[in-house]
Length: 127
Image 1 (cartoon, helix red, strand yellow):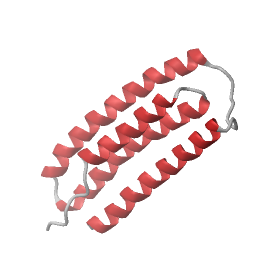
Image 2: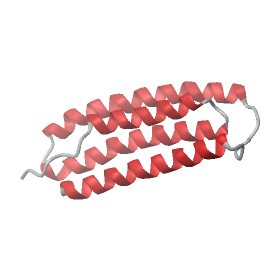
Image 3: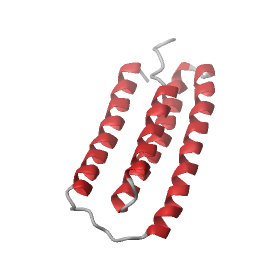
């Protein structure tokens, strides 16, 4: 896959997550998203978020080593798989914040996604 296409995919993933996070923060700050107080559930979900963040970073390190040694045809696929792990953690953190968790859950999700994007840059076009 050409690096130009991968760059567009990367920007689309980042834009979608950022727009969703901005919408949730706006709704929470204006009192639109009041879903009740499920503190025990949110505490459990927070532990799951930290576990998913760690798993996404481990997957990014693993896929980074695989991407460097992979054939040019599979580099793009491995990179997008890694980005998807990071995006999933970011979306999970945003949803937790929407459900009533503190903004730190949103920040953990977004920072994990950014770290995954840094660890897995767009591979250059090589043949």
